[in-house]
Image (cartoon, rainbow, N blue to C red; front, side, top):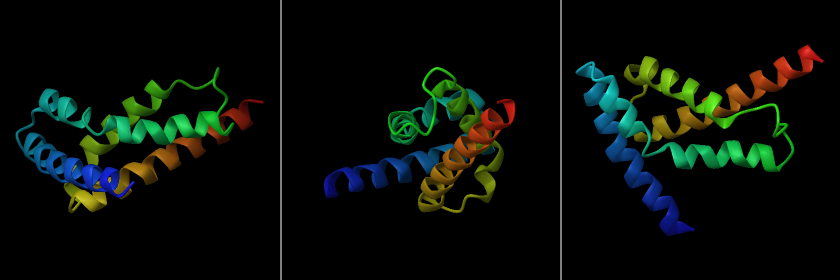
Length: 109
């Protein structure tokens, strides 16, 4: 478990630096490719929500969330100070997107 945490930290640090660089160059294609490297870690959070029954498997597509995450990170990378904030930002944003989806589903019913 400790090795996995350290691996995530290294990946986040390297990815954060590259994301900032690609954003400053307005290179969205490279930004998106770099973001894909950390997406599996975030996807675990989404899959956990589905497996825990928080999200209805048939009503939510994880790709909808990941598309929104791309946009959120790209638009807000300048406010994210370092890789630790990136990690926290991603998980907070996933939680917010999940909550918004649950509220929307509840409202629709």
